[in-house]
Image 1 (cartoon, one colour):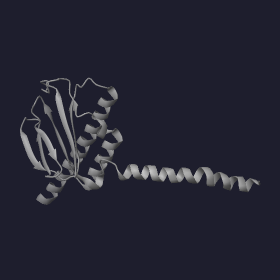
Image 2 (cartoon, helix red, strand yellow; image 1 turned 135 degrees about the horizontal axis):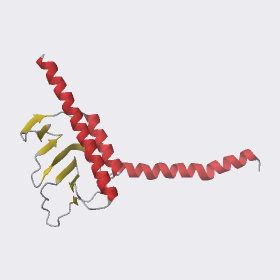
Image 3 (cartoon, rainbow, N blue to C red; image 1 turned 90 degrees about the vertical axis):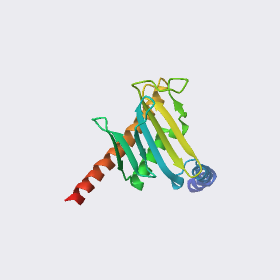
Image 4 (cartoon, rainbow, N blue to C red; image 1 turned 180 degrees about the vertical axis):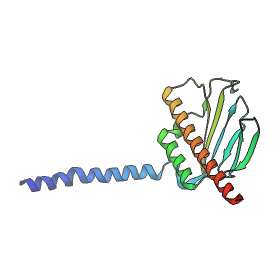
Length: 175
């Protein structure tokens, strides 16, 4: 058997079946993914100290409520683009948000510790919803705590960018 025939035999017997298998396996995995962006509806993000989650954002209603430095509750409309929502969806998938436990709190009774920030992150899809409660002082797996903190920072960054963009647009309209 010549060298050329050996290469052709190798490609036909090893490489081609492997490529077919990978295409089938990963195609089915993507097709049956539980949280697809095509089914994405909204994201809800709430946080605050104690049992009061006064800082809230809901991408479906565009309602944004936060406590400013003077302890006043400010309510406004905040627009998040579809690209930013896609970014947050992908970031959540990258950090393994879908595998996070629903309750990442220290107290077994579910009550918040005074002075500790509690976060509620909820991704809503057509058929499923994933909600995670996370206490800032959660004493769980350090990798899980790090993943939560990274996702929270990304959500806050997107909200801050959108708030700055909204303020600039309002300033331009007022001129």
